Length: 388
Ligand SMILES: Cc1ncc(COP(=O)(O)O)c(C=O)c1O
Figure 1 (tube, protein in one colour):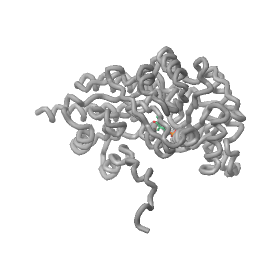
Figure 2: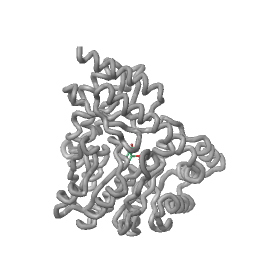
Figure 3: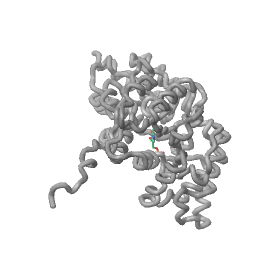
Figure 4: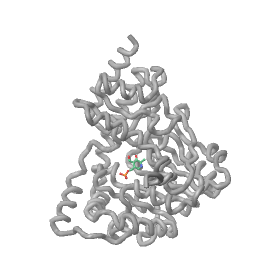
């Protein structure tokens, strides 16, 4: 058997643009990497200590498929206090292996073959693939720098043709850092209701919002029943390696997602779940400190990039800036490779986030202030030399 070993759907999937580029970085020394999307902070000590202690006490088993009831209860209480959201921890919350699993489960639970899903572009790298793997068809809605990469209600209105089932949205966004005010979300909610769409809302970076309060889409009037709210511990609590996320939504959708989860994942790791509980209970001061530091870096990066002539909007959240390199006349992959080779700064070419993102680069400022200062110096030198 030499043909057709691999599913046609999988064969067609493009490999992640970020990984391909970072294979290059692995073989180089002294690189300042502003490429990978994870906090440079180590998980706060009290969270790690809780995890270690749980291992010492022998908590090494499976948990309930949906996740430990204590953690789900903690999440329900937290969301109530933080956003006034009320989710029943028994039936409306599922603990997932990061938001990554939540995205995949949501698509597989919702889609029938050929269903269309609206995906704003620039898009986080897994969005198109998880829609396609579930047999759906992503419809990309391009946003641009003039509008700070915001999706508009009008775009949704025009794109929501027959067979459109859902909108996938992520705010604050990876890769642009763009977020939405309550008024902007209300306009989106209105048109989503008009077209009777579901929303998969990836709010993984909600705690890293700088200029205004984050508003969950599910907290808006009449929206709770059509939103699958995804969040997790990776970003705000610097817990990427623990692999814990959660999905909240209408009980029949959470039940459907749980069905898939129990056959594929069984449950998330118990150590991670215990650590996550501690993070929610006692980690708010740590989150505030990290947010403050990210904000300082954000201001520095935006002003430095604009000063050197790379137009950069001010992102409202996450830990990315997404400047234009159009003035250099280079393709984003060529720019990234050349900068890496000549100045040893690694960043992500815009095209990794969709074809309309050519002419942009993503820089992560989840790196120390000193690293950022050095990287700015090198990028400036690179641009100057390219002009000569
Ligand atoms: C927008 C977005 N969603 C989801 C994820 C996945 O995060 P995790 O699975 O660690 O929760 C990431 C990670 O970079 C992300 O940027």
